[in-house]
Amino acid sequence: MKTLYMKNNLYFLNALLNGSSKEIQELYNTNFPKVKHFVLQNKGQIADAEDIFNKALLQITVRYRKEKFQITSSFEAYLFTACKNLWRRELNKSKIKVTNDPFYEPKDDNEDLALGVLEQKRWELFHENIKLISDNCKKVLNLFFAKVSYSDIMKEMSYNTETVTRQRVFRCKTKLGELIKKDQRYNSLREL
Amino acid sequence: MNTNEDILIEQYLNNTLSIQEKEVVEARMKNDPTFKEKVYFEKQLLDTFSKEEWSFIENADATAVKEYSELFKKEVNLKQILEEAKANYNTPKKLNFNWYLYASAAMIILLIAIVPFVNKPSSSTELYASYINTTELPSLSIRGNENKDVRTKAQHLFEQKKYKEALVIFNNELDLSKKQTATVYLYMGIAQMELNQFEKAAHTFDTLINSDLMDAPKGNWYKALLYLKMEKTEDSKVILNIISNKKLYNNQQADALLNELD
Image 1 (cartoon, each protein chain N blue to C red):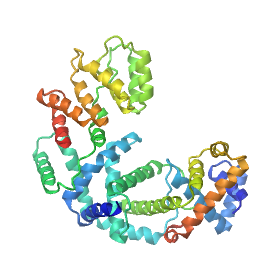
Image 2 (image 1 turned 120 degrees about the vertical axis):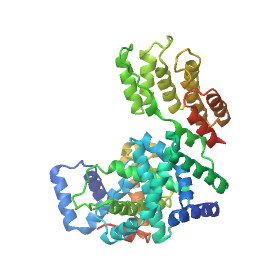
Image 3 (image 1 turned 60 degrees about the horizontal axis):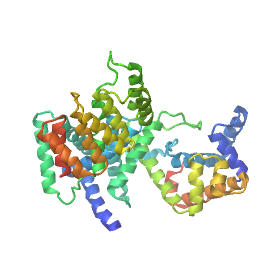
Image 4 (image 1 turned 30 degrees about the vertical axis):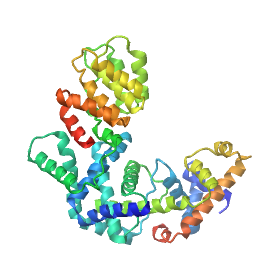
């Protein structure tokens, strides 16, 4: 299955690298409807969908040009995830940050796109590593990250007390943190 | 890190600490880089795995940003091609009979001819998503209409895609045993369709199609889209052909859609 994807993926990646209009139009026609539907269902307009769709294709191109990264799913699925993430990023831009440190203000669109790439890379690093922890931990953490209360996690997982639940969450989070930090990609993406 | 520290960081990030406690945490972050990294990392975890949030890079590595930013700047050609692809995608549907339409139509034919193996047909649900256009719908609340407030409220909910709530209003506040305007049937049918209440949607569109209302033919177009959403492509094609042959509402879009389905 992966080889099948790879051939198809290379076809589109090369089209983007070489700026082949025909194949890019094909990408547009086949993939844009789904992205448009998603954005419209999530507080956006058609113009927003067009904007993030183009940004996602640019992002993929630049990354592939720079580091020949591997797409392990189908190109279409990867593109859709990239679009969903970029749209979530747009929706959250207006929110006030929690920490007080100086925020890196992008000077122009290109810098904003650059930040988007780094954030997408970190998103992938985190998501690939959560797949490596035990099923039980995954379940606990999914509940925790979905902001389910400790008492509800306790019931859902049939733990005896909230203290036990907290400890389980803590241990699973620590495990996930260790995996992420051991990943060689982490060093270039960490922030101090 | 121990669980107590974990709880403290969690409360800090959830904004549930008192002002004094918050100041203590922030002072510690300033003086203790390890603690600061823990806070940052916890925030990254929470934002990354939340379905609504996004984990922004707050203190980026300037070299990496510069490197990528330079690369994006150089993609002038691709940016241009993407703008053209966007324009070509939009043009055929607007049906402006100018050279641009012919050029893009020619290009699509070329594409179909050249890349038959890679040009996968879009799935019917994707086609549904690209053809359903609720912004074309006439307003529900026309002056002089009965139940104007009810209609305004329903339209407002519909526009916010709160279809369930909109349907509650239609079902409770309008006497559906009496004939309604075509617009009411369209709004109701689309809301039911968006909620995957397929049978109800089909019934609503049928009521419209079989009525003697001027806009009754509009029901055909939306029923074709309904079948598309249900992945009943063949049934959808039957209706689209009727629309096309009888030159009913949206027959040009029906032709375009039939082409994409073939």
